[in-house]
Image (cartoon, rainbow, N blue to C red):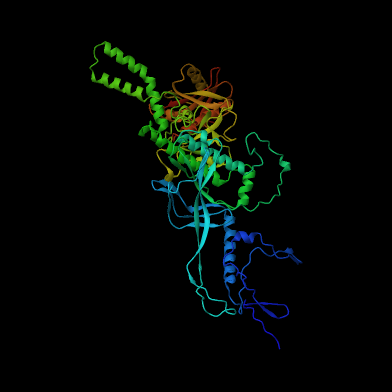
Length: 634
C-alpha cells in the first residue's frame, strides 16, 4: 500500500515517504522578522554558470504561490518580508534624511513636530501622520554635561494590536479556540527621541547668540571630521596620509542604523536653569542620494549638497534671529543696517560744523530763532545715535556670529553700499571685496562655493580671510525679472577666479569740447585743433580707468556723467580726439570703447589720434556738422 503524505504543514515529510508528528512545544515562525535579522543570513550555495560564472541566491526571498499550497502565517510573513526588503533597498538608494515635512518648533507647550516623511540610513520609511507636541518639563529632558546639548531624532517603531480568537492547527487539534486570542495587526510608526550629546568647549561659551553660532560651527566641523576625509586633515594639525596609501577600490559599507536628526536643543546659557533654544538646520539634512556617493564626496573633501544647504539655511535663520533680538537696534536699523551706519557716519562728519554754527549764532543773541533750535536738536540727536565704535554693527561683535558658511545672503539692501560699510559689518579680520553682478549670476557664484572652507570671523591669521560681497546691481534683461532694487546682497569665500593678481590701473581723463562749425576730414586742421586742445581740452567729465598698456570695456559710472554733460550743449557729438604719447592704436581703441559704453544711441563717431607729450586724455568734440571720411581713424 502506498502511503500518501500531505505537505499541509501538520507533519514533516521524510525522504522515505514516512510521516512523523510535529514535535510538541516547538514555537511557530514569527509573523514579522526584522530585516536586520535577515541581513546576516547565510546565502545559498553558489551554482556554476557557463555564461556568467557564478550565481548567488539569498538577496531577496519571496513566496512562490502554487495550487495545493496550504497557506499559513509564515507564507503571509514571507510576502510582507519580501515587500519590505525591496522597499528598504530602494529607499537606501534614495539616501537618508528628510523627504518632506517634519518641521520642529518651540512653543509654550513644548516641542512641536509637524507631519512628514523621512528615510533612515538603512532605508526605513519613517512616517509621522499628525503633529505631535512633546513636553520638555514633564518628564524633564535627559541630564547633560556642561558641554552638552540634545539632538531631536526620529526612529522607526512598531507594535501589534487588535484581538481575535486563535484557532488550533487543523491536523493537530479540534476547531475549538480554547479561549486563546492573538493580535492580528502590526502598526508601524515613529519614535521621537531627545538624545543627549556634547561638544568639548561648549560649556565655556557664554551668551545665547554666541552659543548658537558656536554650536552650529562645531557640529558641522564634527560632521566633517567624522567622515574621515582623505585629502585634508580630519582634525586640527593632523598629518595627511599619502594618497598612494589609500584604498581607492574600497567598497562603501552598509550604513549603521540610526535615527534621522530633526534639530538640536541647547540651553541659552550654562548659568541659567531654563531658556531652552532650538536650532533646526544644525542637525537636519534633506535626502540627496545614496550613502556611497555621500561617503566618497566626504573622502575627497567635497561638501555634500544637503550639508551645504543646511549650513546656509542655519546661518540665515541665525543671523535674522540675532538681528531681531538685538535690543539696541531700532526698527530702521534692523531693516537696513548698512544704510543706517553710513547715514550716521555722514552726520558725524557734520557735527563739528553744526556745533560751531550754533555757538556763532548764540554769540549773536539769536538763540531763540526756531531754525537754530531745530538745527541744534538735530545735532544732539546725531550725538545720541552715533555708535561708539566703527564696527558696532559687525557680525562678530553685536550678533555674536564668529563663523560663516562658505556662502550665504545678508539683509544689506543698499545697492550703493560701500566696501567700508560692508567691511565693518564683517569685522576687521576679513578682507572684503565688492563685485557687481546680475542676480542670476550670483546664484552661480554661490554654487561654486559649495566645497570651500567655512569663513572664520575671528581668524588671527595673515593674510586676512578673503570674502567677496556680490551686489545684484546689474539690471536684468528679461522684462519679467526687472526690479528697481534688490533688498539683499550675497557673500562667498573668494575663489580662485576672483583671486587674480590685481592689474595696475591707468586713469585717462575725459573732456567735452564744443568746437562749433568745424570740418573733421582735414588732417592738418584736426592736428592744429589738437594742439589748441592741449591747453584747453574743454569741460572735465572725470576719468576712466584702463589696465596699464592695455584696454577693456569701461564699467564705471562715467557713462552717466558723460550723458548728463552732453545734455548741457546745443551741439551734438561729432568726433572723438585721443591725445596719446605715441600709442596711437591703443588710444583709438580706448576712445572707441568709451563711446560704446556711453550707449547714447548716436552713431559711431570718427576717432582722431594726436601724439603729444602730455598725459593721455580723450576729448568728445561737439559741432554743427561733419563730413565722414572713408577712414574714420587717421
